[in-house]
Image (cartoon, rainbow, N blue to C red; front, side, top):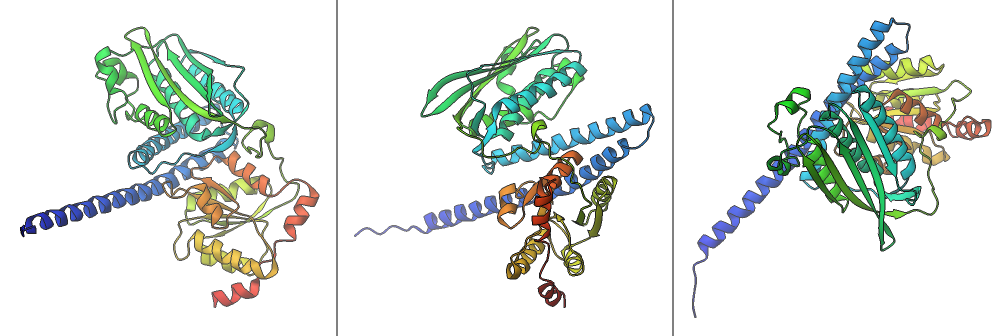
Length: 426
């Protein structure tokens, strides 16, 4: 019988296990830090953008309006940087999830072309686009990530093109296992990239050592890295070809499934705008950030609606005990009682009388605050901060239809179990 002393091996194994725990704890701490700092930044940006939008609606001189538009533009650029850092973090740690939902591909394409054309014109550039007629209108995939990839590539092309044309071409490829291989091309006539630098462009925080690049717009060096991560996450491949002083061509492909019939309505679509409701709404705003309170209160007041404000969930339950509301706008992170706890109690109190009041979640908690989680918790809709005032209005009007029968049905569901609320608040 041979006996081996494995003390050293066991010590080494224990050390590896301990190191693994440290790495995992650091990863969780990093994710929580990013989520919390994102929440604070997004909430502040929401106040800046919201107050700017409200002020632009007032009687101002042209100079004042242009100044405010510049303020909003700067806030949106800051938001884009925050989003880029969060997206990169999620891609790197495997937290980014791919959605498979029905969406109108042609509508997404048209919206991308419309916005990109305006951006190109602002930079004195021409924007050209072409799409294969054989691509179906309705597809199944992740429209948000696809649009993010296209926007990043087009913005990158505009950034590094001083004269000439930006082109977007979308072609239909082969069909494999009922999925269509769709090929995307973004081409520019910009300054191009040296052959030795091409391999660097998909690297995080990497900036090409070129005075023309750094002079026009330094950026964060994250956009293309995120594009690569998203394309690969969705099962595709991204490539780049470039010639210095001639231009650059980015190409990628994605396999998307054809959708027979649409089963959803995009509230942000021009064709699906919901009309303003024809009565005053009683809206409860549950929000602890003062700037966000003012933005929402003034917005709905301007449109003829009545609002009450609760600084936390406990105050919201007190108000629900004495008044009926057509709709609740619920922030998630609040002191004393957060939005999740408040929603759970409201839904519980509705069970005894089979009632329901629409609740729209408002949150800047980007990493863990995805839409599905909040809908599963009993909320009816979700808007991320910073929100667009038009998007907020459309979402509210979607919840409260502009037809008398719809409004009556909703109004029948307004009675909260006040006895249960009263007992809870004691």
